[in-house]
Length: 408
Image (cartoon, rainbow, N blue to C red; front, side, top):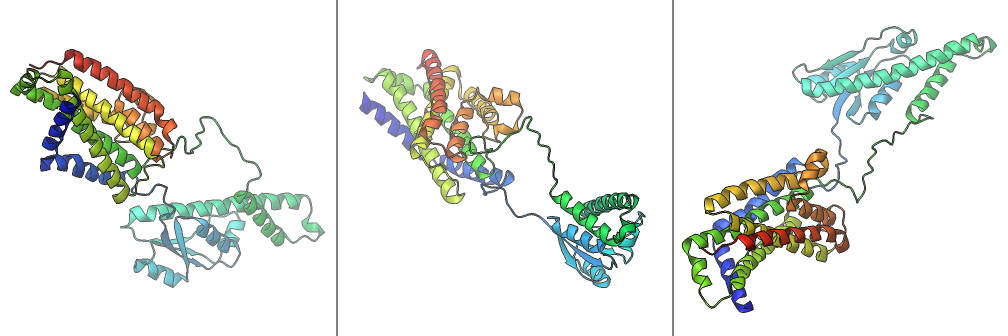
């Protein structure tokens, strides 16, 4: 019995991998989609890049007071700006030569005008044809000016209060007082003494609830989707053999029917495991996917998923009457399960009702287990619940498939 099962399984594997188109669909296409979707959702990096986009701005500070220098300091602290201090002529020339996105000229009376609580005018030079780049620079400059204006107003209120208390009549220098007030206001701005923390619906990201992105999402996702296509399609070959009469001829031979079905399904499972193993190896070598620290956990998830999807293919072979029906139903079923199960995107980013519906898909439980291994670096005990659910799907699919399957 066992020998017959193994012979049928080996025969299936030879037929499956004897076609070049099979290798193209099962290996090349998943790797291509893994690369494309991984790039679209975050690239190969496992962490958020620390490199920020910045734009060069030429600044000419001609202010006779100290507020101009303070504005330049605020501009330098903005991570979106790369400040280049020059004179006015050079600043304009750098914009013309496209060495800077924009130029800002701080006039000589800048400090005096601000202290007088009057409208101050700054010269801002940019290329009007480059609106998309100039706009964030303009907003950053306005933000720094607004910050400085707030400090000046705070210092002005403090100075007015000091004047009412008669401090200046006792020998305190008003200008020195303003500068001290500005300094204290700036310190309060950067390190506020009181902070309000809102904890409602707060989400703390850690290894247990980290959301996968980039290649860590696309690699297991595309592997699960294309492996499901292959295993369901492999089991659907039973329909074709039934139409050709192959199963009927095998059934009259001195071979148990359980050996026939067992050999076919074992071949599908073995092909699925082999496909996923190659894609896992390629993901690690080509895309630097960290497939966890527990080979046992990964093996359990791969085998559990392969058995469940092969059983689903068996059920489809029992319910569909023709290959056309099986192909149409299989395509719709695999794409739906992949989208709802999190193979295309992390389920953490979709609405709650989609996450609930997604639990009806075996791919959901497979992706959850793979993410436990890849993203959260968990071990065998952590993925056992997902594996058990997949074996539950297997039992249901096989029960329906065996009950409804016919050899003719």
